[in-house]
Length: 154
Ligand SMILES: [Zn+2]
Image 1 (cartoon, rainbow, N blue to C red):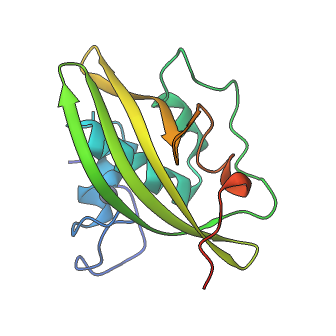
Image 2 (tube, rainbow, N blue to C red; image 1 turned 30 degrees about the vertical axis):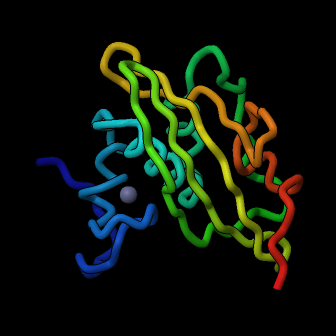
């Protein structure tokens, strides 16, 4: 079993995506190349990839029809991701939707991203197709649209 050298951390610490698993046993395995078991797992691994700034992984898991030529996560200021909550996951054959709320902070303001993402499975692998953010269709990534999302203020 191949393991990456990671900083020593207690196994009890949950993965970035919120599942009660160590990163290596959760999104880390997908980031290392293991196919996602379902669309929700892929969506969670993409959230973790945003947290870690894994541009290559985000592009590799984007469907070829909607994938941007490049992904610039260096937007200023960078969002600090605070947590993920998956609200719903439905699958019908090789297509699936995942509804989620991601919380982040950008420029000192807490923000909330509510999106219904669509996924397609091709050759046994799931890919992110596009998503609707708060009812508005969008193919943009969560990070790229961060500044357009209404904040949930105190
Ligand atoms: Zn995870």
